[in-house]
Structure formats: structure tokens, C-alpha cells
View 1 (spheres, one colour):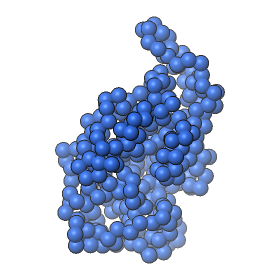
View 2 (cartoon, helix red, strand yellow):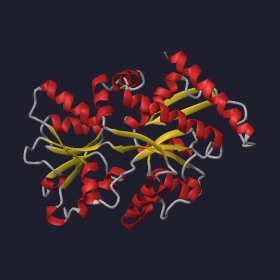
View 3 (cartoon, one colour):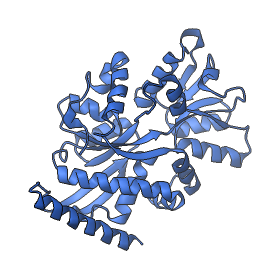
View 4 (cartoon, rainbow, N blue to C red):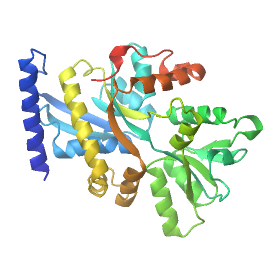
Length: 331
């Protein structure tokens, strides 16, 4: 099956080159020796893994590999050293880099929903029910923390009504605290939530339930801007000027995204080869509940600027102090 997919990608590339040459547009030079695609333990990375496994960029590089990063801080180091070419990223990080003068591009937005409130408290059914109660999360300075702050403020969950937020070291630590009952409510990303619920069911522990997705709460709180762009793919500075490669990458990623959503069980088995610490069942469950939809960054610029604008009002440094220029968006 993978060989036929690789052949289809090569034919598509040849057709694209013919069209571009016929229009007098520039194309990439000889294929690059190596491309590194990087991403976290999240659904935004799953299409990258499918691209590697199916040879989606075989005509653009001799070797294409996937590299797993564990935290945004680690990603920042990898990008600064230019050790990755394309990476999954929270949407604010490339904005910071671009506003600091680095010629990076945000190619697309593909994740619009992956954060869930979970609880062992049967009385907690919405975010509002967390007023004054402990809330565990793994995020302290990154985009999910900013979104949580804005959501709580807009819902009036401040002062004495604010949840008492506790920070876990990482997702594994948060899962352990919930499984042992040391924490009862948390905000976690997928696939951590699916992994937590599966482990809890096997242990026969106290019931844990999905309370509400942060994105659902956001839509009800900010109806003028209901879409919440959270993660996408960026081109690092060394490749940001290669429009032909950027366009080809974006099309390949879109195809792989649609395949993963259409074939969650098969996609999960493929992803497990690279992220073998995740059970296949948890990966599949996370694909089914994550809003994974690849859209060109140029097309969703209004949604991105609405989010950046909201962040600018409260945490301007988290997007680099201003809105990115028009050239930042898209391949």
C-alpha cells in the first residue's frame, strides 16, 4: 500500500513541476539531502509520521525523518540550532520568532481542539463548576496556560472564585496524581486524556470523566471568535524562503491529515511505531476526539490575528509584542 502511495506522490510532484515551469514560476533546486520533521506527543504530529512512512516528500529530499520533541522549550532549542526543518508548533511560538526578526513561516493550522477538563468530581460538569476548586495542569508559560487564563477571566472565575491551579511536572506526572486520587480535576491535552481514562478503567479506580473541552467552553465564552487555532506546522528559517517546497509540504500534510481522520485505527498503528510508549488504543481514541483539520495559514489569518490580538492585550511577550507581518502566513 505504501509503495502505491509513494508513486502517487511522485506523479503529483511531476505534474506540479510541469505546471509551475509552464507558468514561469520558480521551483526548488535539486532535492535536499535530508529533511527533519518534528513534533510533540499530540495529534498534530500524526500526519508528519504518516508523511515519513509513506515517502510523501521522497522527491524533495534523500532522507526524511521524524523527530519527537517533549516540550516547547526543547523545540525552541532545536529551532535555534536549525536542527529541524518543519515542526509542529503552538501557533504563538513562530509569531514570537518572526517578530524577533527570524524569517520563519506558519504554514498551516491543523489542531483546533485537543484540551480537555477531566474530573473525578461528579458535580463538575462545566468549567464554571471548577470555581474555587483545585485544578491540575501541566502548562505554566505556554499557549494552553494563556488560553486557560483568558477563559477563566472571561467567565468571571477570578479572585476567590478562581480555581486553585497546581502545576504538574509533565503529563505523566499529572496522570499519576489523578490515578492515585491526589488530584481530582485537571486540564490536559490529548492523547494524555485518552491514556488517563484507559489506565483508570483498567485499574478500576474512581470514575473519571471528560468535563468539557476547552474549545467548547471557548466558543460559548467568545462567540465572536469561536474558532481557536492552537497548533500547526512552521517552516524554520533555513527553508522559509523555499515556496515550492513549502507548498508541496502543505499539500502532503493536508493529505496525511485527511487520511489519519478517515483511518484512525490504521493511523494509530503507524504512529505507535514512532511513539511506542503510547498504546495504540489511546492514540486512536485521541484521533477521534481531536479536531484535526489542516487549513492554510493564509486562509485562517483572521482567526489567528483574533487570538494574537487577545494575547497582546494581556501577555504581549507571548506573541512577540505585535501582530506578525503578512508574509508570515502560509507557504
